[in-house]
Image (cartoon, rainbow over all chains, first blue to last red; front, side, top):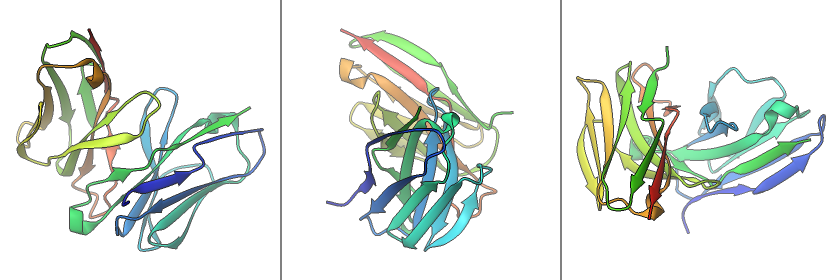
Length: 113
Length: 112
């Protein structure tokens, strides 16, 4: 099956803890993204990687750091979560070959208590 | 101001009625996509349509670059069409990053 996969589906944690989310795509794409969708359903880009190189880094708190081992994987680490980090984190991928049409994973819902 | 504006913010239809969702943008673009999101669900790409008209079943997307607008038409709506419809574009000044800017979405409710 070719798609974008994310783990975990849900995560509940306490303020100050570290969390890590995984994303893998089997579409053969060379560009991957992390988006944040808040409680009002507003979607905003956080990071973008092309062939393991960071190409987009929006203004996000420094506790967020993306990690890419190869062009099929892009993880997101949050060093010390805050209550405002509660959101759905969506991973997507695309490629120049497909004119950057983006395909999304199912999302990881983070709840910070 | 906001680069991508969607209207209406919400829409309630009776099953069988048609819907017209609008997306207006204030910048020239490299790409335009329409997505569908069910509550608690993932984003499903409906159309990649940076210009012109595309059809898929009961859905039609039309993007008119000169008028800086894109529309999504749903004909003969069904209750299963209920959810949030999002348009997103990559501004032309983003040289090959694929970075999408999203509208706020239209929440569609189709009643039986």
